[in-house]
Length: 204
Image 1: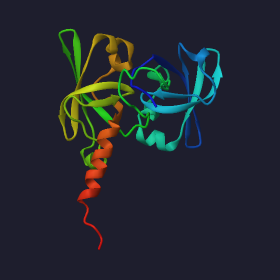
Image 2: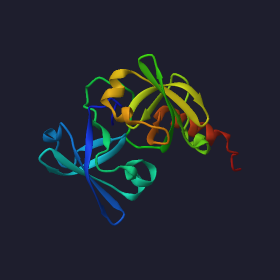
Image 3: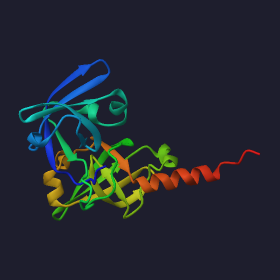
Image 4: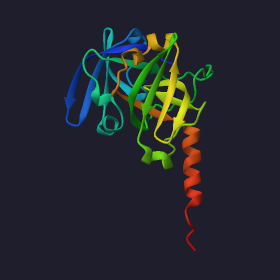
């Protein structure tokens, strides 16, 4: 379980393929505090630490993760938003984030707004029944960052980014066409699924 509050950015130092799996090695400022089998959200995708070497650690992404996220798009030198799992008893500063990416969205436009930024994103419209939707003032996770939705439609939304978040996440590298990991609000997904089930005709 995560909160969507990014702790640090890691830099991809190497990528290795093994069958359908991808091994990612990253340098991170908190590597010395990690342990094998620990869960870390990478751009919002929960991955398990499998090796540690000095200031670097390695995680493995399986085929399902690569299909649903932007992890397979990463290259050496890319920055990745990192968050270690939430500690019980700690404050929930963002919102409930599972680290299970729902789908990949696309950056449509980045606009400056007198000291802040507005990022406009799109996502597939045919997944609304699964709860992959947004509402104004609702919560959304973009590349692992807990954000509040500003504008919302069936297949797009925008978020406002303050300077601190812009500088301390990989958002400052966003450009038109970039793919981002999206995790929609878990409560909204449950409501959407229950509504879809209730509308199905009963079998007599």
